[in-house]
Amino acid sequence: MASAAALNVALIGCGFMGKAHSNAYAQVGHFFPHVRKIRRRVACCRGRAGLEALSRAWGWEGVETDWRRVVERPDVDLVDICAPNYLHAEMAAAAAGAGKIVLCEKPLANNVREAEAMVAATRSVPTFVWFNYRRIPAVELAARLLREGRLGRLYQYRAQYLQQWGPDPSRPNNWKMSRRTAGSGVNGDLNSHLIDTAMMLLGPIREVSATLESLLPEKPDPEAPGSTYSVDIDDAVLAQARFADGTLGSFEATRFATGFQNDNSFAVHGEKGMLEFHFEDMNHLTYAAVSGDPDLRGRRKVLPPARGPVDSPNFWKAGHPIGYEHTFIASLADFLDGLDSGRPARPTFEDGLAVQRVLHAIERSDRERRWVGTGL
Ligand code: SOE
Image (cartoon, rainbow, N blue to C red):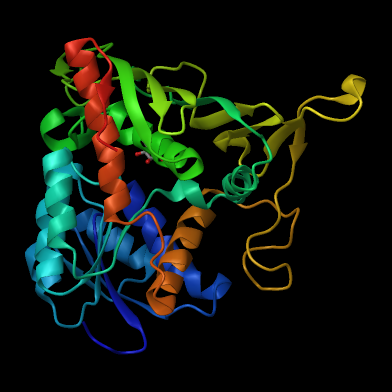
């Protein structure tokens, strides 16, 4: 790994996440001036037009269409994988083999076997998975309140990830619609976020009982009007879970929730109170306490503190709302901070593997129609 002060980054993937990560690399030093400087060395993907557009928009110094060349480059320190899921394992192993730091989009891999191989292949380099919703100030506040035991004994954890684009006839076929390239449907794409946040807040999930559903196995193909394309992934997942601490959990993820754009939410109920979060209202955390005048009790929305010390330049002052892009900037800032402090930021690939084990248990439970242990 080059020991230059600046960290030379290679980004693989030019889609939605390529843009979110490019913005994070461009912005992180503005908001978090104490972390290592970033050099946007090279962006890589197969489609030339998308690649050139991304590079122009976000200021990548160079472009490359062959990822193998990118991971071998001596002027690259960090490889960030935003390519389709089925490529994660091979790319991560090659990058780590060349001594690079490896960051990867979620879910970590197509399945547990690949995720285990990724953990094994990257043991000697720093790793990170972009479960970005962990870094929302309201979610961080929830984590702090739970750590402090503010809810007392926990009764129930309920999480939902609701999107509506599944049946949209104008959506072209892409890699997310196939098990071969995506590993799964909503289980990996959306439920993985719910599981990661839940395990960050409450600890490991021990066992699950789940149902997966493909709601529209033939979808209209907007690129060939009048015809359809086959889809072999899950469109909706419902899971009951038991955490290691005994708390009962429920998880629901779907792309068929008509009326919902991107509602990633959770609620946790305990003997002393409750917490609730909705990403579509990401600047608020809802809190209710079982104390005080019973007639004045109720759920109230609180505005979480700004990220970092109040007088630091991190993001904006309290009360000045932040957005989706800040979750990626904060993820990157924590990762870079961890590199320098020697206390690696989470989630690492080990954490990504733990999520993958739960996703796997969910699929197996659906197939075998019974409760399945996660091994965690
Ligand atoms: C799917 O629509 C998607 O883009 C996910 O892949 C992301 O992880 C999620 O944050 C938003 O929705």
